[in-house]
Image (cartoon, rainbow, N blue to C red; front, side, top):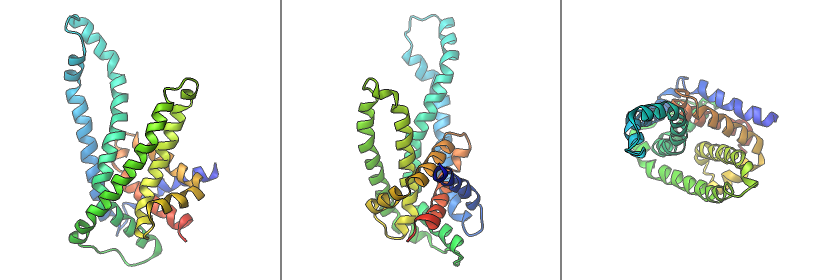
Length: 243
């Protein structure tokens, strides 16, 4: 439990790191990508809700009943929208921000280790972009491979009682893997090596992932989650995992 609490605190440290000199210029680009995508998702869901709702409702329903049903379904729709945003737009945001997240992790490491501020050209970032995005796609494929059996278990009687807990644990573990990939990748550690290292500190990884999962669900805070999680994962790696 101490490791879980310690891992969660590194996300909080990440929120403070992304605004420091030498780091913030690399943090604001993934932050802007995340903000634009999440804002678009919210606007799309809210603006199209009436149209989607009307298309799902039978045409013979009276208008007063339709209006009444809309008031009931709005809270449910909001909850489903939040889940949709997390599982779809978070994946897209991480994919698009991947080239900048590696640079951000390097800037945070330089800051924490006392080295000179990072100076990179846009040409270098663009050159590394295909490799970084391919790495992100590989992580998504790994996540899907775990999702399939868990989805099946969710429909098995008795076992499905603990399915929500398993989904939370899986999501937390995947977020820990995702964001630690950037500082570890900068040290030439491949994805299987990263998983092996994080398993040795599973409590720290899960604590960090749980905190990141919770922050992703908080409106407006989720705009800052990607750069804060990259910065926090870098600090956690330097303090506890780097050999």
